[in-house]
Length: 155
Image (cartoon, rainbow, N blue to C red; front, side, top):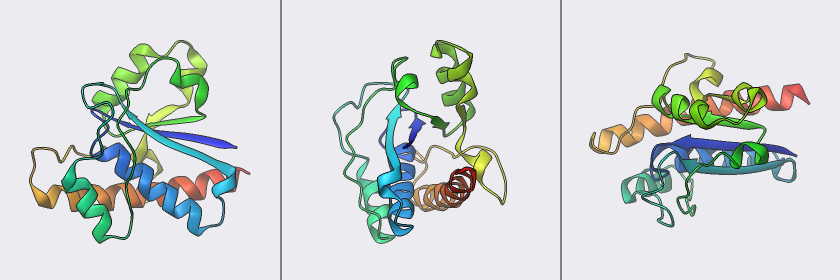
């Protein structure tokens, strides 16, 4: 079982979208029994909430349903996942600050490190208007395609 967690700030925009996209890609590949996929935020103020309505609308238009409820990533999550994928450098720094050991730090990277077309951050669309949500979807999808290819090649 490959255990993957996507992490952003509040777990209502980027990380649930990446989770939904990756879940769909895994399902389309017939590999759902080989993966455990989740998402979380470095902050907990949205805990229990569904993804932002704009994120859900963008994902629905693209055929990716989102049902995840926000949760906060804690130090204990490191033991539950093999791959912890941050959306931006700030999220990455927050994760590394709570990582209990070197093994936890080693499994924590930026999601776009897996994007064959480029690296960098997935920008936070929360205050950026509707166009930002489409851009985030495209960035997450490209990186998730690369991630799945890498993880299945390792097996």
